[in-house]
Length: 402
Ligand code: GCO
Ligand code: MG
Image (cartoon, rainbow, N blue to C red; front, side):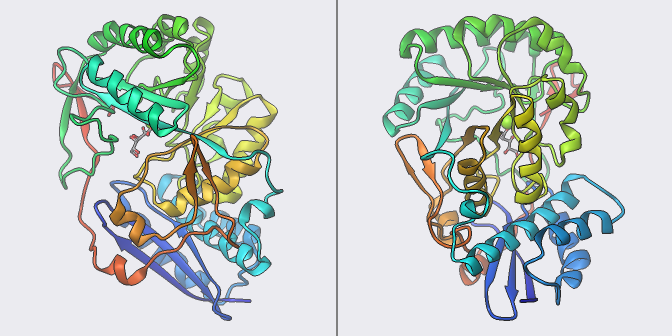
């Protein structure tokens, strides 16, 4: 069974997605997500120019060998563009292997370790009153884990907060929008938000918060300490993670659990964080971390060090990525949580899938393979539109992290 065709499909049913579709010489198809938000065309052309010509004629059942061929063969290792391209090939090959075997991919990964995949949704609002209403709404929908983001007095807007409570995933203009940030204002406000949320909703609901890389280690330590009475499930990306040893300082000061890694591409980005037990959850996901093959390697290392999975799962990733993530989530021993924001109807129409949400959990497809596809005709009706993520400045105009 050889790979006979490989198509790179870029579509924008509201936001941009890049998908690789492989077809074998006996007509079996497989799909992989290659979406790198804000840099979509870089991955699309990496695939089209450098990868597709190498795939035609290769054995479709050699997943590991193909992974190593693309990783070592490029000479230039790692990085989000390379790893997203490799991920797309890897995911599509797992899809094909499942279809050929007549089994959902989670069965090929060892079968179920749990009944369903517990997910967390996003509650957000500019004011605390609005946030409490959003919390109640998410609990009504069945979520048992909720990420809490609230506006900060004195800041016009902030990461994770929309005016109408909609999930915050900016599609962005071609030229990045600019926002203004103050860590001082933020640090003063956030603990009082969690105090009100806990007193309103009690101890049972799992609460999470995303700092989105904006603090220094000592500021993050202070925030973690201040949030301890509210028993967060995790505090996410308190600082940028290039300096892995910087997490030692945060760890020395707080027992608030830490989740890091939606921007990680390989195990080397989190090796120290994991082996020194500096984090509690690793947020890497299928599309940006080299596909099912490499992400499973990251989770296996994490398992040895009591670190659990908490895969990134916003609508910036396509339903193909989410479908693949669910097969891993349901099978690994050290699953923690899966992020989940429902895609729009237009996106769901382009990517028909059979995973489903019930009682705060997502359930992977029982169909052979991943249980997700791309409607290429419909995809062609939504052409690519350039869009960037925002940038962020301090009040004195210094460029900061968004
Ligand atoms: C999250 C993330 C997202 C990213 C976005 C850009 O935890 O959900 O931080 O909001 O910013 O997906 O890729
Ligand atoms: Mg995040």
